[in-house]
Length: 179
Image (cartoon, rainbow, N blue to C red; front, side, top):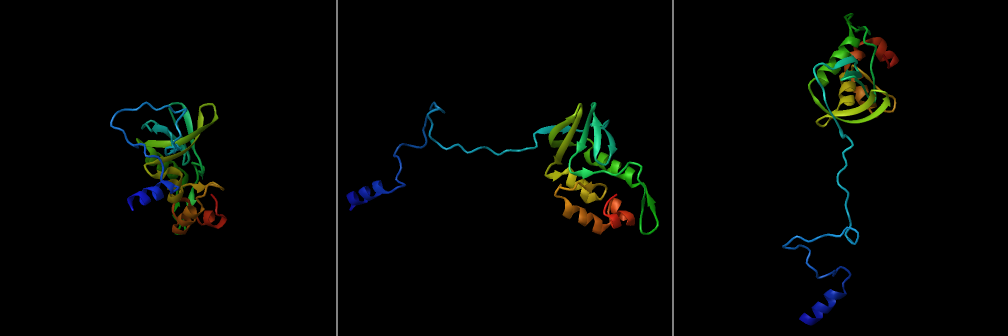
């Protein structure tokens, strides 16, 4: 029975080699002759690391300057920094200035992990995250910036509109769905 069992096992398609898989001593590997399948490692597109200094200057809710380089946050459209919003209750707010202040407080002294590409001399478009949170999504959720047309943040923007957060407290913004 044992002999028949061995014969059957050798004929199976998954029988494979009897060579040991692990060794107890270092073995030199010749990659040119290696027949093993290589599995690519994890790819993280957020390779640019930026530490935001307190001296960074926010221009509006979607861009800032640090060390002579201007950074523009991708997928958002920031309001004019001088924009004034009129809420339903009659209150008036400087929502353009609040948008700029929100961006500054969000990134100040933080470590950003970004995908960056150059769009002009000393100007970079960036898509960043702080930890697991995308900055663009956080800004749109706050209501202080709008989502760019093809940004994939439409649901986040609609939720901010429904909550009347930031710019969306202004009835004119909600009616036209832009500010």
